[in-house]
Amino acid sequence: MYRTSTCGELRLADAGKTVTLAGWVQRVRKMGGMSFVDLRDRYGITQLVFNENDDKELCDQANRLGREFCIQVTGNVNERQSKNSNLPTGDIEIIVTQLNVLSESLTPPFTIEENTDGGDDIRMKYRYLDLRRPNVRKNMELRHKMTILIRNFLDNKNFIEVETPILIGSTPEGARDFVVPSRMNPGQFYALPQSPQTLKQLLMVSGFDRYFQIAKCFRDEDLRADRQPEFTQIDCEMSFVDQDDVIDLFEDMARHLFKELRGVELPAKLRQMPWHEAMKLYGSDKPDLRFGMEFVELADVLKGTGEFSVFNEAAYIGGICVPGCADYSRKQLNELTDFVKRPQVGAKGLVFVKFEADGSVKSSIDKFYSPEVFASLKQTMGAKDGDLVLIMSGDNANKTRVQLCNLRLEMGDRLGLRDKDKFECLWIVDFPLFEWSDEEQRLMATHHPFTMPHPEDIPLLDEHPERVRAKAYDFVCNGIEVGGGSLRIHDGALQEKMFGILGFTPERAMAQFGFLINAFKYGAPPHAGLAFGLDRFVSIFAGLNSIRDCIAFPKNNSGRDVMLDAPSTIDAKQLEELNLRVDVNQ
Image (cartoon, rainbow, N blue to C red; front, side, top):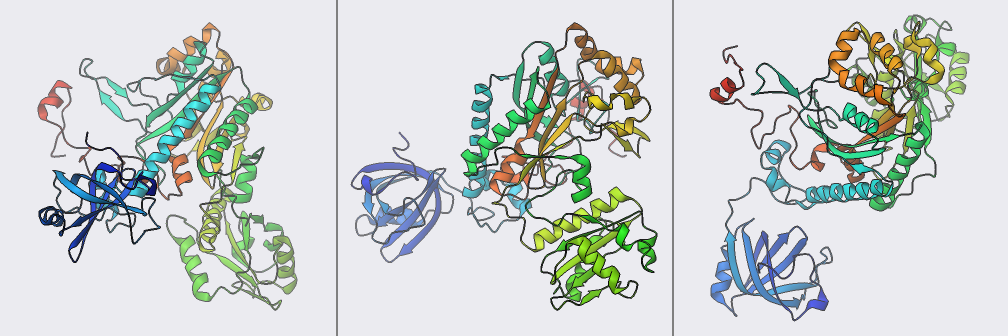
């Protein structure tokens, strides 16, 4: 038996027991004739004591231990004289009588502690060491607990867990596919699934009624903090339901998770905000509601009421009121101007109006407007003395709103209003069914081609498809899109019309989605679904800025696994078997 106890379970009640522990050396300290070793495993840390007066050879052996040596010890549980209130095991120590080195270790490239000295790159290269750090391990334990809670919740709601294929056919809509060459079918390729979308719809045609899967998905997209080339979805589909049925059930699931994992009680009913309202008030379809600063449209106040040509020629003028920040210095205001001019934001400039505590007004545009206009601006913005108003304008309303959204979030960060221990959740509904693609020069499906149009808007499909709303819904928490879904089209004629609007010929639609089109000819039920991003959900609960620390073996910002050195070249013989040829000189 390698151990009788773990390094996190022994307490004062165990004093006098003889125990065997196994784990990794966290640190070694020598004090006079005594040596102390902190032994760590997944469950905690226990202090070991070696006394050279009792056994000098054993004490010398302990002094030769290095960090991260894997060892086994046997000894007696003893009450500590100098207790450590920071450790659950801090009231006891082990007086070691036997030491066995199971495996020696090189000096690790960074400290295996919560506040490590290792940077992101080195930690990703040695991820197996990084996972020994207690805070990283806790993220993985949180992820485990969340998946168990989800499985049990959905099982109690009569969902069936079904695994769908990883090797499927490529689809033309959405993000880029990762493709896999087929050796047995030369010149042909599988694709890795961006989601199990069509397959779970087929399960509804099959009469499974309620399906779920903790599904691996793959998208060949540019990466960022909340995106990886491979990720995990809590993927679900239901038959004979409408939008409210889906929202109510998964709102209950979210409520269950927040209560069990964070002790947070979500409201009895979450807010539902139409997409157009979210864009108008926050410039985002995933608004962060932990703080205010909603947008106020100012064209009526500032356009044509002064000699500032930028506003007079703008298609959109909007502002936010930042409470209590009229004392911002010129340096701070210049920093904000530089922020919005960054390529990531893309604005040309920023206008400020300071309503000083003494009632006076200072502004970058005060010479262009009368005091009466500023008084009207103050009233329209709902500003008080001591507040700062920040204004942006542009030729494109949606683009300017997105820029103003970036500014709003920056102010939220600067003022400490985006508290990771505060949770504000809502549903965004009534998305546009289509969006215009400048790259493709055509309408594209906002979500996917199988999304049900809003019944009231179906007559608009022929003449004004751009005005059609979708029966779609996104779950948003703290400004992060955690998941979303939609009602699906189950009527063949309506699906055919959708394909036509998206530019599919009947032949192309049949070539790409014939399996689904044909399945719908055999009594397809009304159905709807939803998928939560498990990685994003865990990162919100853990208070992380990036999803990487809740994934065991993530990729870096370039999509590389620096630990496995992947992607990499493969042997010429493998390429030949796959009927592929790569010119390394290109």
